[in-house]
Picture 1 (cartoon, rainbow, N blue to C red):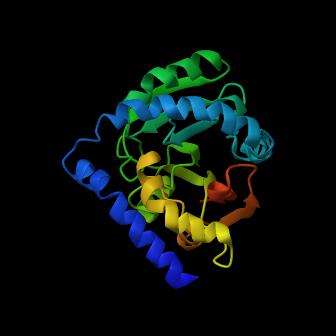
Picture 2 (cartoon, one colour):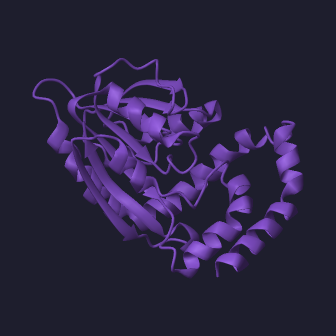
Length: 242
C-alpha cells in the first residue's frame, strides 16, 4: 500500500500545483477573509457532534481554579469562540488568533456567552505569544489548532511559558490514524488538497508525540474516534500539567 499511497500523493500534488503557485505569489490571501465564515458555520456541526467530549474534558477546568480570583484562560487559535459555552462562569478569557478576520465572529460568541469576562483579543500566532506574560494564566486551551501551526514544539513551549506552575494545557486535536488503516492511506493521499481547503490544516500529524516530549509534569491523553468525517475521525483529547 505504501508505494501506491506515494504514487497517489504525487499525482494529487501535481493536480494542486496551480494552488501552490497561487499561494506562493499571494493570490490566495482572500481566503483568509472567507475562512472565518466557513469555520463559524462548521463550528455548529462540530460542537453538536463533540459536545459530550468537550463537556467531559472541560469539566476538569475546576481542578486548576486558583484559590483567589477568577480562573484565567488563554485560548490559542480561538477562532470564532467555539469553546466558550463550556467554560465556567466568571472565567477571565484572553483570546489569540493569527487571523484578524475572526474578530466579528468572535464578538458574536462573546455576546452569546456573557457568563464570561473577556480580557482581550490578540492577533498572534501560537508560536509567538510575547504579548502574554510569563506564569500569568491558569489554563491554556488549544483545540483544532496544532494541526495547522508551523512549529508545534514552539507552541507548546510558549504555552508552558505563560502557564503558572501547576497550570494546565487543554487540547482536542485530530491526528494521523494508525498506519495499518485505510483512513491513514486517504489522509496522506488527500492531504495536498485538504491543506488548501483547511487553510494549512494537516491530517497526518502525530501530535501526541510532541505532547509527550514537551516536558509537562503530567499528561492525561486519550486517543478517541470522533463521530466525524473519516479523514479527521482520529482525535486526541486531554490536558497536560506544567
